[in-house]
Image (cartoon, rainbow, N blue to C red; front, top):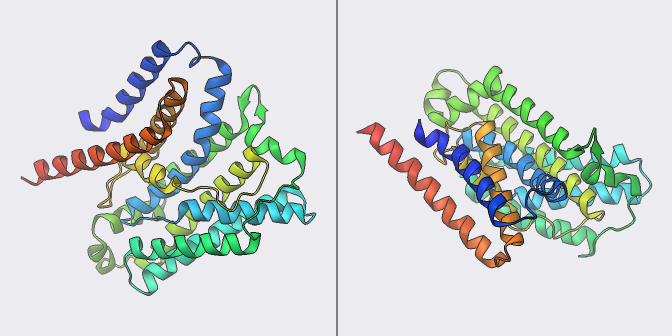
Length: 307
């Protein structure tokens, strides 16, 4: 029980510590900036939560974000309406996720290897179709997606809340969610009980790809450009958010509230480091150390219960 509450306690302690350490932390502008900055990682982490619960992993999420954001921006640059450009990005992300899922289940290859391969493929394809150049000619109104506000609250926070609620409902109250936990806990047992493991595994990857597509459009909106190199290193932050929030890399464990807390911890660490003048290189080292500590605690907990 203490370990499950640890991420929430860590978030509270970190929030209070930063409030005391920097007079700029609690300003409305900075808090709004934290929400907008973490919205992308949070959205991607929701999809990664489903994948990790189902016993998988996806190293290509950053590449999917870049590919989806670029295609959506190119669609708008070609004269398509904003909603159609966003839909293009979402469909591109879902398609990439579906490919990851199909390759994993049809070829029976470890998802680590599959998504490592698609990471390279998508990065290459994104650079090829863009000639390595960003897309700039985007309708000004598209900025609302990443920078707009509704009732004084950043629009991306409303969007994130909607995605989080939908993901939570899927995991806790639908057949897909129940089967994802079963597959992650014991895929062989799930197969022999009649669960179509391949179908539901592909479905989980497709949903994650869709959320990465949405994150890609949010990123493009915040930058007002389709960047072919966007999302580099995001996979590390996304996996870290899930693991910090209580997800197990062995599968069968994870939750939406835990993942959101984990992602906001990452966001506060990044924002606090910037406010306190800590090197971004050190931030990367801190993230890596946090992943090791979180996984170690999870392994120790499992060994204690096993004995």
